[in-house]
Figure 1 (tube, rainbow, N blue to C red):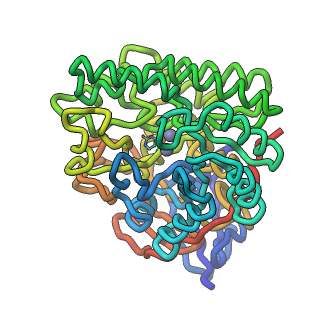
Figure 2 (cartoon, rainbow, N blue to C red):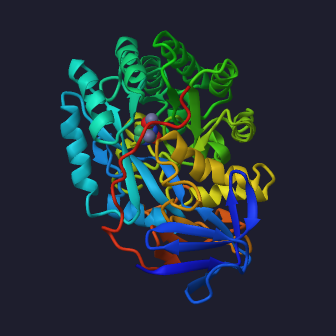
Length: 467
Ligand code: DUC
Ligand code: ZN
Ligand code: ZN
C-alpha cells in the first residue's frame, strides 16, 4: 500500500481553513500534520496555493434512469467518470422500483447496472414507484441489510412514479419506525396535469410551458402537505429534493424553526438559471433545460432566496439531480408537445465548480461550500465520517482545488454523455486540479488515471441529523 503526503495546501472543512499536510496511507487518511511536520521520505503531491477539500458527495443522481420513453444518457461508467473530473468522489444514485415491480428486483437491477462500471464510489437511495404492502416490508429489509436508508416518493407524475397521500403517510410511518428518511419530489402532480392539458389545448406547446404549467404554488403546496403528513407520522424525517421556489423554501424554513426533522436540497440550475433565459430560449432550444421542479421566473426572488437558504442552513445540501438527455432524439421527443420532453439536466461534472463560484461571488463562505457539497450530504445520508471530511480514518477522497485556475464549461470539453451543455460558456474562477479516491489519483490536471470498476458500492447507515 502506498503512502502519500499532500503538502503545502490549505485544508478546508466546515469548521475552518487551515494550512496543513495530509498523509494518506493506502485507501485512508492516516494523519494531518502542521505544515512541514509530516514524514520526509514519502511520495508527495505539492498542494501549494490549493485548497484541500473532501471529495464531493452528490446525493442525487439518475444514471440510466428510464424516463419519458427513453433512458438518461449517462451510464454509471460515463457519469461517474464525469463526476470524478468535477471533484465528486461519491454519488448516491436512485435505484428504481417501477409500478408493479418488486422493490428488491428493482434494486438488483440497479446493482447490476452499476457493479464493475463505476469510477467513483456509489450508494443508492430507493425510489418507491409502486407503493404497496410489500413495499413496507421491503423498506425494513433495505434499511437493515442493504445499506439503503432513504426512500424517494413522488407527489408528481401520476401514472408513473406518483404516490397518493395515503401511500405517502404509510411510507412515512414506516420510515419513522425503522429510522430511515423519506425524500420527497414535492409538486402537486394531478393539478399540474390539468394545467398541462389546458395549455396543450390552447396550442401552447413550446418548452417554456413546461415551467409555466408547474407554478411555484404547486411546489409550495406539495412541500407544505409533505411537511404536514410527516408531522402526522410522528415527525418522520423528511428531505425535500430539488427545491426551486421561494415559497417552498418558506415552508421548509418554518418547519425547521419549529425544530422539525425537515431538510432540503437545491441544485445548481435553480441557483443560476431562469425560466425566461433558458427554458424560454428561441424555438425548441429551451428543451435543454426542461427539468422538474422547473426553472423559476427571473424577476422573482427565487435565486437570491436559495443562496440565502444555503447560508442559513434551511437548505442543507446542493445535489445535481443529474438526469442527462441528449438533445437529438431524446429531448426531441417533445417537439410540438413540451409534456413529452424527457425531464432532466446533466450537471454531475460541474456542481463543485458552480458552488465555488458562489464563494467567489461572496454568496457562500469557503467552509459552507465544502459543507454543502461534501460534508452535509455525507452526514445526511449515513456516509460520514467515511466520506465528506478530511480526518484520520476517513476514506482518502480528496480534491485539490485551485482558486487561481479557471474552468470554462462546454460540450466540447465536458465528459458527460450529452450532446449539449446546460452550462455552455459558463466560466468559473477556480478549477479542480487533482482528484483522489480512496488513495488513488483519478485526475491530475487534465489527465485521467481512473478506471471503471475502481468505484465500490458503499452501504449507508442512518442519517446523522435525526432527532
Ligand atoms: N426530475 C427531473 O428533472 N428528472 C428526473 C426526475 C425528476 O424528478
Ligand atoms: Zn424528483
Ligand atoms: Zn431526481
